[in-house]
Structure formats: C-alpha cells, structure tokens
Length: 132
Image (tube, rainbow, N blue to C red; front, side):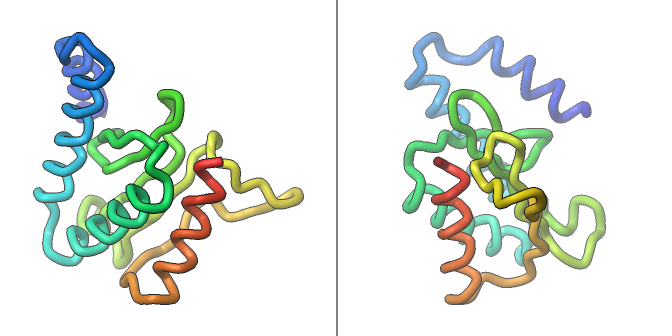
C-alpha cells in the first residue's frame, strides 16, 4: 500500500504533458524491473518485450510497485515477481479491463517460472486479446 501511495503522490508531481508522464511512467517500470532479482528480472524483461511488441497501444507504469500495462488509464495486466512474497513462481495477472472473457469462467492469473517458445506464444496471445 505504501508503494501505491508513493506512486499516486509521484503522479501529482510528474511532467505536465501526456508524453512527459508516459515517459516517466515507462522509466518507473524499467527501474522496477531492474531492481528485481535475476530470475524475476528475466521473466519481467521477457514479458515487457512481449507487451511492447504485441500490444504497443498499452501504456507502461508501476502499480503497487509491480510492472503493469494500462489502457485508458486502467490496468490491463501486471507482473508480480516471485521474490516479492517469497512465492515459488511469479504471476502474470489480468485485471477486469482485460478482454479475456470466455463464457462464464476464465483464468485471470498465471503462474510463471520460465518463458520459452511455448510460453511466449501463449503470453502473446493473451496480451493481444487482453489489449482488445
């Protein structure tokens, strides 16, 4: 919660133009990734590359200290590093603004331990769908 409060406070002080804000948000995301341990950083970098390539319309930012990607100011997806909560896997999560609806039930988060070719293809498909 403290991280989120700091993010909101920092947003108030950010640049005046939308481009300046987007640039600062992007740098915040890159700094958050750079501050991760090796295993989480590799996963987050792979996810960032997938998102920026397959859904460039999504904006980068941090959300509760996690790398996140937004559409129209609403979080679509985020990456939760394993080390943050001493979990055995990182999490790729999707928020309600993600367009992943599939009938009456669908997954909103995925455990992530590695990003090989199969995972890259699945993540790309999910990101494209989520971005709408």
